[in-house]
Amino acid sequence: MPADTPPDSPQNPLDAYVALLKSKGAPTKEVNLRKHFLRHLVSVLQGKPLDGDVYREVVDKVARKFPDDDLSQQTFKTAAREFYNFWIGDVKSLAKLNSANLFDPEPIYIKINGNLTDLLGQMDADREWQCADAPSIERYLAQLYAGGLAQAAIDVRERLLTLLMYVSRQHGASPKVYRAAVDALLPLFTTPEGQQVFVSLAREFYYFWIQDPAAQVAGAVPGDMDGNRQLVF
Image 1: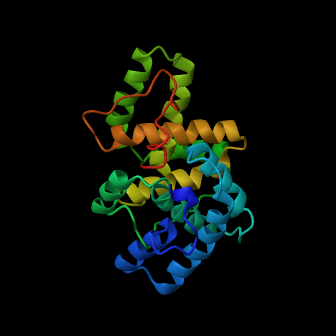
Image 2 (image 1 turned 180 degrees about the vertical axis):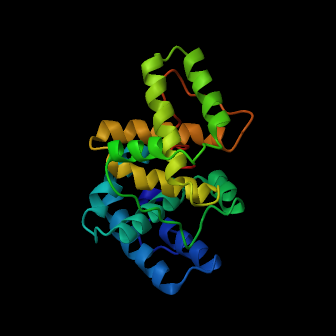
């Protein structure tokens, strides 16, 4: 099992991840920074179950011990997200992600100012911006409605998804931009419950956003997602 692999084993997940970064042309400084963070992460993960919720809790705990500037924290979060499938040994997902070029050695960072209320007000006041992804949002919300989710809850999700599109408006549409927008908004949710709902919402909506014809909601409320799929946007 990956969790029982010694940190210095030639076949351990960290070595495999670092090798992939190098194969993608990541700068040595970037590789070393991610490797340093992940070594600490792996040491705390030892003996813990291969579970997405446990993994996220450990990532948050370890990240708090590192520099808290936006750039560093985004780098650590990106490394943790990319490393997850190495950690659980999900070879199929690794192959899919690698072929889709989701492992970007130079991720995009989206910096935002203010709280959620400020951002929503800014979005509402921006008369020049139109959400090009409104049809995808409507398709997703329609499935939630059909699943019995209350209209008030649907309205909240519509606002959050529209805001997600708004904060990424200055970048071209791509999976890494989508992830960067999620990472930028996540700290604005002040409770673990709020963060979990938002992340589950963003993960579930992603498949509608890329216009996957097979995209389906997991249930009436986003969040009941397969643990292995949770960290794969």
